[in-house]
Amino acid sequence: GTKVIFRVPQGFHDVALVSTRVEMDDCDVSKANIITRPDGSLQPDFEAEGNNVTTEGNFYIFTWTTSAPGTYYFVCTIGSGKHCLAGQKFEIEVVEGNSDETVTVMGTETPFWTVAVGYPDMTISLGDSLRFVSDNQGYHDVVLLSDTCGASTNYDCCAGNTISNNTEAVLYSTEDFSNTSTEFLWTPEETGTHDVVCSVGSHCQFGQHFTVTVESADSGAAKTSLLVSAFVALFGFLFMAL
Image (tube, rainbow, N blue to C red; front, side):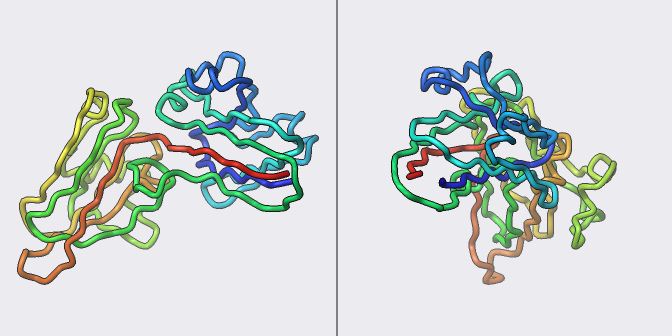
């Protein structure tokens, strides 16, 4: 009876079940049973079991209700398993018992550089560095926008051709993030405010952006660092009762 809620950015991922731990570990999605697709459509068999998909802003909210004990293996099949290989997979063990608990599937607390996170703006001191760690997949880039763009309430920097028209520099490209064991440290060379975004697809519109204000070292700004990793998602292990 436990409800498991997936909060999925529209158009980027699906939710699917594979039969065995080996298939999940190897990201073999050839026989995966897709429950909900990137367009939010729910397969009829799963709809009949009382599951549902709703919309919340730019996200689909998929609710899956446990109905029988056992171990379930969830993956994303996008890219013929590439999202799974990047870590978008997890298992749920359902045991006998009475429960009406609701569990939301979420990523690690570490602020990975990906869509649907919601990065806070920050203030750092001149000389501080932001560290970007690659997952060797090449799904994202890091683009610095010019001061003329600015971050409005609805972040117009993400709309239309705004990114391409206001790109000041490409700090790290998708090719950079495709390299093996790559780590990048960006140290701003002067004070000012910078909008940092991913320019791939609609990633910026789905939350992959933040504003960093760089102040002089003697301004008393709270020293802040950010570790961001180009990662599709990171799921974990859930243990629950029916």
